[in-house]
Length: 413
Image (tube, rainbow, N blue to C red; front, top):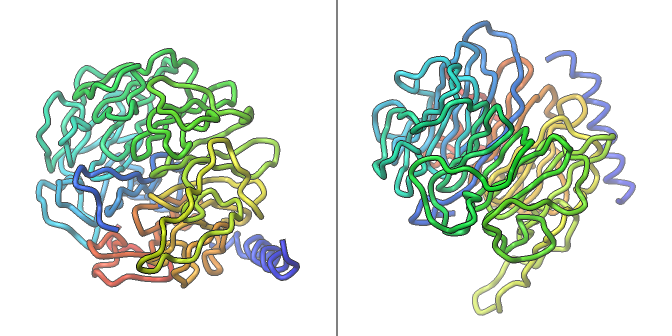
């Protein structure tokens, strides 16, 4: 690391400590695409309407409030905002009929929530049965996942969904072309199916076409598509059942992006990532090829099938991922991002991909971060939600569709 970069990182960290007291492309036709599946839930000022969690799908964002209600904004072409319409919205709208929500996740073009009665409800795209109600009909209002109780959290991938149960087991449903349901087969299912052989799970994450679970032992198990090594088992072979991520004994959380995965670690260690690295989404300072020009040969296959250390970051309090980028909350609530950046989703006011973390301006006081296809949002200790990046469908929640290279407040939460 250069002296200049080291000095920059130290300066931002010190500023964060000093100020901390004040206070995440055209989508494929099948609707695949990862978005944040796990975010830190944080109690913030604001009473029953306070935002406690923020999550992003490809082109929409949702917020869970302390009173158990949910508000969403952005692309609504499949009803993923849950407000009873299919009209996109650049400001938050309420998910109709949903109360008692305790956890929330958003993926490609659908959204799900766990409820206080331990059931799960979902809404949005259902072309692959990812809503779990036994049908393949998309809906703009929540439907209850069939025959599922005991759920404590939910993870939403490109076109599949998984839920963690209080027993430490995981069930999944939806698209299973790459074995992302973990059943030992590639047969899709419109109702929940148990992940074979998986016990002791404490958290679950879902990417485009793969899934991962944090284990009570501190290990991580993943399954599904593995062409980029996103399962982390040292191979590039599709896995239809859960298998351990190698060389990762001390994980504390896990997230799954489009074709990559990341985990935070205990013992003061920084995060690690594995899988696709074409845009630097592993954060390991890989030298990236120049942007391709017409007539150029295909770029080299940049991917890693074992965990890689994210450079220049010590222990982080929260990590979130988008389709092709990732971000982490570090000391004092500063935010650092890496990966794809064509819409300034890294928050560095540029558009060049970065394979090492870059600071999101002078931000402090962030408690959680989430990313979509080309946008990023944070929850702050003040209770505010801020977003930046692409805004074609209003996914920044600013009341308009103007993109932003810098964090901008979500209105009307």
